[in-house]
Image 1 (cartoon, rainbow, N blue to C red):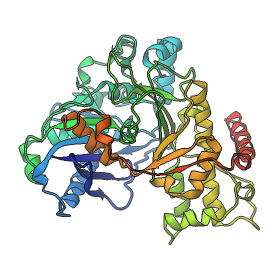
Image 2: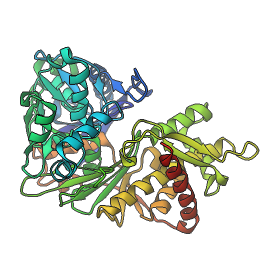
Image 3: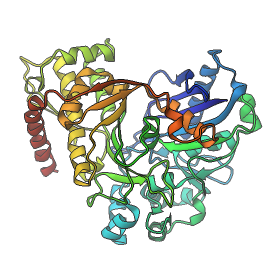
Image 4: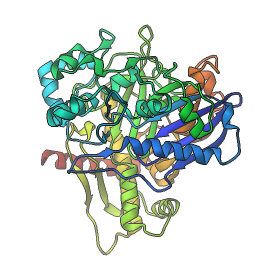
Length: 494
């Protein structure tokens, strides 16, 4: 059996086709080659078109099919990973009513803060494991308050992966994991949160049918199958947010295991078997892909909005005509500490780990006679690594103390200077794997269609590339402490 994985990223859509028997990836493709736009009608707003995701998903699959490395008719299950926390709304004809308000949009922060106080902070944390904050429920409340005519035409609300699954199958479903990332789930009662529904006055019928993550979420329609060269009736058997999916693809399923990624955003994601929460909701707890009522598996998530996005920005500003690999080489030639240059890397909306403050990106101590573009490249990567350390210390306050972190050798982890800064700043070794979100989604589909005996069996051929140990903690620690002081001074001024 062949398995198709679709990864709906902010920058592009990637698909992979995997042989279930060997777990080998037969072909991958992404679309577009250049990064997709984020629509920002106002400062702090971020939207994308769901129709764009669907067109890009089809284009990526057609590119993969065109490689001739597999027979599309042999695909037997589909899995979908997606950018988390986005809001998609459709009417009864399954037509999109507005652009998706995506994960890094900040417009609903105050709405969520008011809900947090009205529901009660202790009650919210104990039951939702989070503040309603800037999550999907609060984004829907923003639509209700600001676009009332549109709101009353909504039939169903979805996350980005639910929308693509709907386009494939005509069915609309959700899961406990998805509802928890939208802050719609009451973990004490293991049901939809009456507190959230009642406070925001949401109709329960807006919520799609709730299915397990690893289960059938509809089957590919005949019309779509003909357009994409697939068989009609292929089941979609897995849907997950990108960070739980990244953890799954790294075989991070058991309490105490921890994954990281440094793509458009940066994330550390640890698995727990306890209903834990941060009192300030700076890190967030959601149901993991293998969450079940009798076996609690929670994902504790630290998110930094501006990691890869900042690295892309500095490339645009100072790296014209060179590749990311060349940027990384230049950065590696600069000594630890970037000769005094310090970068605060928060320029992509409100940062949850900084109490939803909009801090911005700041460059400190630039010396016009000393610093070159290579210093800028290294300073950015060190600043991002220090942001990970700052967030990991918050996770440590909440009982998450990793001995090792697993990550895919991709994005910023392709950079030796970033990886070195990450392990030495956090004091934690990193295991790097050849992993990919779309491959993880394909293997998730295999779990859902029972092509494997267990979740762990789906990753028996997972390939560890290297282990990077911290060997220069003494060099990095004083630099980090200086960076932290600059950040806290900035926070005190907001």
